[in-house]
Amino acid sequence: MATATVRLARGRQARVAGGHPWVYGTEVEDIEGSFSPGDIVEVADSRGRFLGRGYINPASQILVRIMTRDRDEKIDREFFRRRIETAWRYRSKVVKNTDAFRVVFAEADFLPALVVDKFGGYLAVQTLALGIDLHKETIVEVLKEVIGPAGIYERNDAGVRELEGLPLRAGFIGREFDPVVEIEENGLRFEVDLAGGQKTGYFLDQRENRMALEHLCAGARVLDCFCHTGTFSVYAARFGAGEVLGIDISGPALEAAARNAARNGYAGVCGFREGNCFDELRRLERAGEKFDLVILDPPAFTKSKKALEGAVRGYKEINLRAFKILRPGGFLVTCSCSYHMSEGLFLEVVKSAALDAGRAARLVEVRRQARDHPMLPASPETYYLKCLIIQAL
Image (cartoon, rainbow, N blue to C red; front, side):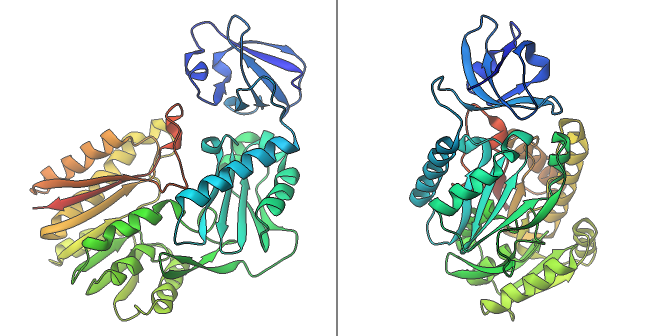
C-alpha cells in the first residue's frame, strides 16, 4: 500500500476531486511520509479525505497520476490484469471490421501513460511515465496472457519520456520479428511499420473518420494533404474517386503510401508527391488547380498552450488555401490532433479561413477520434482529435 500521502492545498482540489487523474505539484500543500520516484502514494484533499492512489514523480510537472479511486484496491499484478481485461472487453464491443486498434488508451482506461496498440497479431507498447514504466515487465506478462500476441515491440522513443527523466528506447520485447506488418481495416489492407512509423506505427484514431468519406468521393478529384502512408487516399479511391493526389514531406511514408495503393488495387487512381503541404497548397492555387474534395490531416501544430497562437496561424493558412482550390459544392475534411486546439476554436479558425477565402461554408459534420480512443469528461486532455466536414459553396 502507499507509504506517503500527498495532501492538496485548500482551493486547489476541485479538479482532482471531480475525477481528473493528474495532480500538479503546484496544487500540493504537503507530502506526509517517505517515497521514492515512481512509488504508489495516496492523494487526499486539504482535510485529509482520501481522493485516490497513484504513482508519484517529483521530476515531472504532473506530480501524481491517479490509478484508482478505491481505497481498498491494491496496485499489484491483479490490478493490471483487471484493467487490461476490462480494456480488451471494451474494444471487443466497439471495434469492428479490423484487426488493428488501440487496446489501452492511457488515462481513458485508467492506466495513466500506458498505450498499447494492436496491429494484426502484434502489439506496440508505450510506457510514457516513470510510474508506469516501473511496471512494464508485469504489464507485458499480462498482455501476453490476455491477448497472446505473436510479438511485442516497444516504442518508448517519444520525447515526452524525457520530461519524466526516462531514457528513449525502442526495440523488441522478447523474440524478434519483421516489424513491417500488414493489417486489415474495413476490407482494405495496409502496411504498418512498428519500428519506423509515426507514434506506434499508424494513425488508428482516424479509422472511423476515413469511413466518413463514403458519400463524398464518387467521381471526385481528391487532394490528400499530409497523407502520410496514404490511408485517406486509399479510402477515397475505394469510395469511387476518379483521381487522388496525396502530398507529404516524408519520402519513406510516400513509398509506403504507393505500396498501400497498389496492394488494394488503386495504383492507377492514387498518385503521391513529396513536398511541403503549405508550399504545395499555394502552388496548386497559383496554377488554378481545382478539387472536389480536400483532406487536411496535419501533425499536431502545438503541444503546449503557449504555442497555440502559432498553431492557429498554421491551421488558418492551410484551410484558407484549401477553400481557394475547392470547386463550388466541394467538400473539405479538415482535422486537428492538438488538444490545445479546442473544438470551438478550431471551428472559429475554419470559419475565418472560409471568410477570408470569400467562400460560404456549410458545416456537414463534426467528428472525433475513433471509439477505441474513448474520452473522459473529467479529463478533457483525452479529447484531442477534431475532424470537421465542411461544404464550400
